[in-house]
Amino acid sequence: MSCSYTFPSGLTLTSTFWFTKHYAGGKFFVISDYSIYRGRVTYRSDEKNIHTLIITDLRETDSGEYWFRIITNQSAQKWIGKPGVKLTVTGLRVKLTPATVTEGQNVTLTCITSCPLTDNPTYIWYKKTVTSQKASGQSYSITNITSEDSGEYYCEAQNKYGRLNSSTVSVDVQYAPKNILASVSPSGKIVEGSSVNLTSNSDANPPVDKYIWCKKTVTSPKASEQSYSNTNITSEDSGEYYSEATNSIGNRSSVLVCFMVLSEYTTPFCVFI
Image (tube, rainbow, N blue to C red):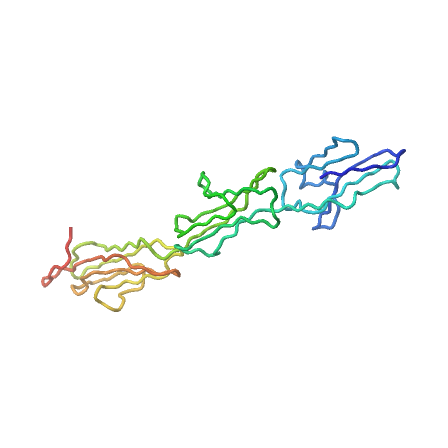
């Protein structure tokens, strides 16, 4: 930001400085004395009666109006350059569409700012923890998104003045239960009168909120817990079982697990390897 000026002959300049208003407190501050500008402000006067204020590492809090002031050796002879210089510092942010992401959807990430960027900036997309860029362009589309696409994303805008990174946006891909693993303990042949425990585990986002254990050929569920324990087991409990896992996205069933309870009247039906 630059200001050029003239003043009557016979006067001597005693002070020149830039100042701004700290809107939170309603006070005026000399830029060089204001702590948030410390180390980021340079004054330059390359030509006579022209003063330039340079602010580096711009922040959104630097937005505001800036004025240049002249003070001379006569207390009544002092001026403020008007109008001031209005500065708007905008940050980049990423808009996620849709806001809630479910596996299989088409998702778009858009790099936006509160005011237009000049000089036709280029945009590059990155995923945190991944070194190579994901895409270029102001928008980045992911078709048929999967859980592997979950993560933190951000965009980088670049023009002749430099580069600016956006804040990150979290893409949390939700999906119905999958990779459902059902197990039986002890496995194989079980002696009548002993106990058996069936356990189910699943990968899901959000986590599974309900498990149901069913026996093949039996219409009503056997239990509604992640683990199903049967004590004092009888030959009638022999058979094939599966678990059904459910979350807010959907439900899926495990493969069948089989166990056989041995008694003197047992007819084998499970094949054990």
